Structures are given as C-alpha cells and as structure tokens.
Amino acid sequence: MKSRRATDPARRVAYRVLRAVSADGAYANLELAKQLREANLGERDAAFVTELVSGTCRFTGTYDLILARASGRPLSSMQPAVIDILRLGCHQLLSMRVPSHAAISATVDLAAKAVGERVTGLVNAVLRKVAAHELDEWLAELTSKLSNADALAVRSHHPRWIADAFAELLPADEVVGALAASNRPPQTHLVVRPGLADPRDLPGEPLRYSPFGTVVDGNPGDVPALRQGRAGVQDEGSQLVALALSRVDVPDGPWLDLCAGPGGKAALLAGLALQQGHTFLASELQPHRAELVAQALRKYSPRPLTIAADGTKPAWRAGVFARVMADVPCTGLGALRRRPEARWRRKASDLEELIPLQRSLLRSAIDAAASGGVIAYVTCSPHRRETSEVVEAVAADAPVEIMDAAQYLPEVPDCAVGSFVQLWPHRHGTDAMFLALLRKRG
Ligand SMILES: C[S@@+](CC[C@H](N)C(=O)[O-])C[C@H]1O[C@@H](n2cnc3c(N)ncnc32)[C@H](O)[C@@H]1O
Image 1 (cartoon, rainbow, N blue to C red):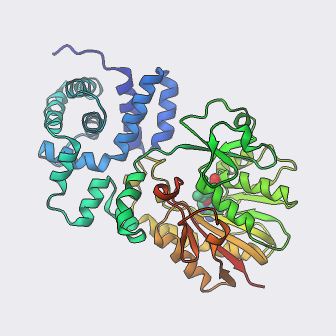
Image 2 (image 1 turned 60 degrees about the horizontal axis):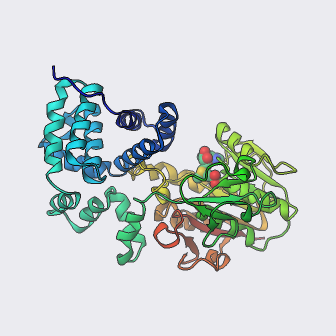
Image 3 (image 1 turned 45 degrees about the vertical axis):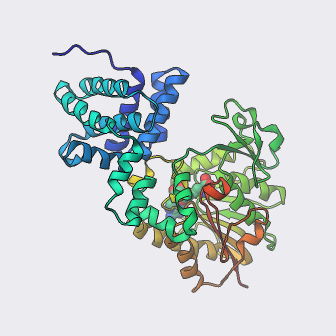
C-alpha cells in the first residue's frame, strides 16, 4: 500500500461538514461553526475551511455537472462520500487559488483516509481532468448547447427555477447581477434595541438607510451592547420592513408579531412599541424558537409577553391589535447569500405547502387587527407566488385595503413594485425582503 502523508486538519474538517450537510441535511453555517469550535484551528485554517465549505455548497450544482462530464459517468454511480470529496477538490481547483498539484494530492490523501485506498485512482483521474480547464472554460463547454434560460442558471450557479423567478421579476439587464449577488457572502449588520442602546454605541459605519444600526466587516467580535442584549445582529432589510410598519398612522393599541421566531423583528418592534407607550405580544409556533424570542426581548422593561402558539389558531381576541407583523415562513430565496446550501435543497414544489400556510397566516393577521389597524405581510423571498400573489388573493376576500408600502420608506430608492416593497441585495445591499402593508377597514 502506498504510504500517505497525514491529511491536513482543515480539509478533514471541511469534509466532515460537507458530509453532514449532504448526508444528514445539516445547515452548513451551523455545522461549520460547530466543527470549527471542536477542531480549534488557527485563524488562517478556519478561514480556508469556511471558504471551502461555503463555496462548495454554493456551487454544488455546477460542480456536479463538471464532475459528471470529467468522469464520463453519472454521479449516481459514485459513492456519496466520494462525490463530496470530488466537490471539495473542484472548489479548490476552480474557485480558490490552490495550486493544482496541491489541491489534487491533498484531496487524494483525504479520499484515502476518509473512504479508502480503492477510490484514490478515481479521485486522482477525475480531478486531473477537472484541472485541465478554468471554471470559465467549463462553463462555456457546459452551456454551449443549452437554451438561454438554462445557460443563465448554470452560469450563475443557481437551479433553473430560482434563476427563472429572478428573471421574471427584474429588468433583463439586472438579472445576472442579482444572481451574482446571491453568491457573495453578506456583510454583517448590527441593530440596536430601541431605548436600550444608541447606534453610536456600535462599531462600524452607519447603515445605508436604517437609522437603527451599523455595518461591520466580518465578525463583530466582542461588542458590549450585543453581549448585554441591548443590540443584535440583523440584516438591514429586516430593519426596514419593521421601520415601515412602525411609521404608519394607526389608532392606539397593542402590537402583535405573529411569526416571531427567532425574534429579530420582534426585538426591534418591541422597543419601538414600548417607546410609543404600547404593549407588544410576540407569538411563535415552535417552542424552542419562542424561547429565542424571549431571549431577544429579555432586556426590555416591562418585558413583552412571548407565547408559543399556532398563528392560524389565534390565542388572542380578534380585532384588537393596532399593528400586526406577519413575517411568514417562506422559501428564503431572498437570503441565499447567507445559506450556501439552501438553493440546491429547496424545491419549487415547496411552494405548494408554503402558500396555503402563508394565506392562512395572513388571514389570521387580518382577523387580529383592529379597525384602522395595519398588517405587514413580509417574506424573505421575492418569489411572486408567495409574495404579491398571496397578498392579492387574500385581500380580494378580506376587509382590507392594500396600502402604498414604499411611501413609508421614502429614503430607499427603487424599492416600489406596484403597491409593494421589494428589496434586493444587488440594489440595496439587503436581503431580498418583500413587504406589503394592508389597512383593516372599519
Ligand atoms: C420567517 S420566520 C420569522 C422570522 C422572525 N420574524 C424574525 O425576524 O426573527 C417564520 C417563523 O414562522 C414560524 N411559523 C411557522 N408556522 C407557524 C404558524 N402556524 N404560526 C406561527 N408561527 C409559525 C416558524 O417557526 C418561523 O420561526
């Protein structure tokens, strides 16, 4: 048997994370954080593992096409662990600046250790073929006989149904940029708990539009306001939809967050409600997520009530709330840059389950609102079927008027789509949040 160098710890960690993602359905970010904690790598190795895992997860669909072409056989004929090893090799060869000989030999050593000597010949041969071309050359070859729509999906490293959804919503000259923005990790945005901290207490630069926070490079580190529960981490898009809801004129009355877990928007809204002298109720279906909401609200006094309840079977009286946030479960297509593996895991068919729930939660939010009260329907997705179509279908049959939502965010350019607000990473630097505001008739 050939004597092998010990595999390097960074690649072993990356392999373990990728196996957990592809075999056990783990979330890449959570698994990565867990494995990095356990492995105790230095800063450089940790950065290498992070890029290797995140990039491999993001480009999985592209690498699978390249691997099938390079190996001349369908991937379904290979052992799943070998496919993951080959994907890691692809990312080093095609998208990281690892010299080919180092990427190939380290990946072959990893294959020997993780799977066995018998697969090293295959891994070596396939990766040599992969290394014969640059990524752009592979993309040109893969797309040469495809339709424009299929080629766009492959070139942008997205499944076709997601590329189609973006293309349907955006002007033609923005689609490539919008999809490319999903491939870049986001900056970190911080947010204050209103009344408990001031944005000037936070590190970083002020956010572009939101008055509540700052943008920092990388990990915010040990920020006292965060540690003390007086501030949190929250994308600016989420801050803006909460801000818009808080700006609408409504009669006095309590505020409700119907789908509050893990508590980002609730923490901002609760502070604004308390500042205006109103009570705030946070509700969330999953008890463990309701616990996270309670944690996020822990520093407010008086402490807002958090309950675990199904929003479609209200645990509150109808017709009492002045403002209702319905930030419903969705495909998350607006936050692909945060969840590297999500685009390949989500399926268009997920919408069939989500849409009835989204409609039912919006109806429930309308029931909860008082006359003259306002409901914010929010998704972290721009997909037409779970945004404007849900709102229009429910509003057609309910005592509400759809308001001009963009009017409440005058500082944010190019965010109006009809009566709705749609934010975009490539335009606004935020997640692609959708917002509709509906006023309940008397
Ligand atoms: C998009 S997330 C909300 C994010 C949250 N507003 C924030 O800013 O942190 C949707 C939440 O709805 C919850 N959910 C799902 N079905 C629900 C239901 N029937 N009633 C209430 N909440 C539900 C999910 O558990 C999830 O926590």
